[in-house]
Amino acid sequence: MIETRTSVLPPLSTIKRHLPAGDPVDIEQIMESAWCERGLAAQAAGKSVAIGIGSRGVARISEIAACLARLVKDSGGYPFIVPAMGSHGGGTAGGQLEVLTGLGVTEDRVGCPLRATMDVVVVGSTEQGWPLHLDRNVAEADALIVANRIKVHTDFHGPHESGLLKMLAIGLGKERGAAWIHRYGVPGLREMMPQIGTALLQHVNLLAGVATIEDGYHRPVELSVFGAEDLVAGEQCMLQRSRELMPRLPVDDIDLLVIDRMGKEISGAGMDTNIIGRWMMEGEPEPEAPRVRAIVVLDLTEATHGNATGIGLADFMTRRLYEKIDLPLTTLNVFTSGGLLRGKLPLVYEDDEQTIDMALRHVFRKNPEDRESARVVRISSTLDLESVQVSASVLRDIQDAPDLISATEPCTPEWHDGRLTPF
Image (cartoon, rainbow, N blue to C red):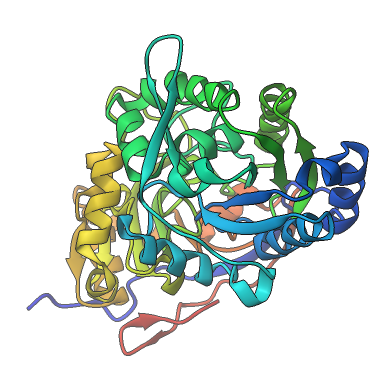
């Protein structure tokens, strides 16, 4: 049996920081104005309108979905929600409806039916001959609205990353369309995905693409409504603004990063690769920063429904997390994405204390005497970076940083039955 030290972590301070911020938007006011300015009421009247909603934890997504459904109904149309989430939810219609429920998108909340299918039809092809897969319910509707957040992607960087085009090409392509694009790896995402999404605009009656940008506090600070004619250029502009608002870890050089929880609603990769500095995508060079020697993940969120896609980005995990993993669901998502390295299992230890202890032993194998001055950062998740915990060696580097608001006195972390207490 492995002996666990009494205090496996050095004393930690809880710091609070200013994150990149904007002014929260009035969702209903902006969408109502755009609905009027673009003459969408006349376009929706008498039509069945599919509203595509994805699986990511987009801030206030149930409010956005409910507002769109109301606008369609008030215009004399017949709205319904469709899951636009590729192979997520275990690649089943029921699983995708369960994901929507977890996001608060229910029939009672949004005021219209939810219709899910994994069936797709090929509605055409690109100039290169690539097939255009489309959710059957969407293909049979009179019109389409898609709503998504524009953000930096976790697999690649390019002119179009995570946003409306990705939702069209991959989300509404369901498992079949997602697998077709992902089989080409990162080039499929960077180059083919935007072209397929753009081509789909010629084969659907797109009433509107609703795009939000979130700041470092996970608040929508910009909302734009596009038509088919300005969606591509508009999304590209919003991506750059999203990049500017992306938060970061307090330092670039870290011995141990402890992440309390991961999940698909936090990031498509479970934990945001742009935050942790790891891509682990074949053919893509690793980011230059941050430089993290070891990553420990302690738990899986309930909202991810056992989907631990991205667990391979970590080096160590607890048995508690391991036992929550739905292996068939995770395997399907990882295989569809093609990022097999991200599906490999980290080393598993019995509890938080032992897992963190073994991670630090690994980092300081050659120089165990330096462990007491370890550069440790602990975060709740890659989506929650306002308050984090840091060791003294990290605090010294940031004590004069302009974004630092406050820092507590260092104290020895507390444990309860082997679990690290929340901070």
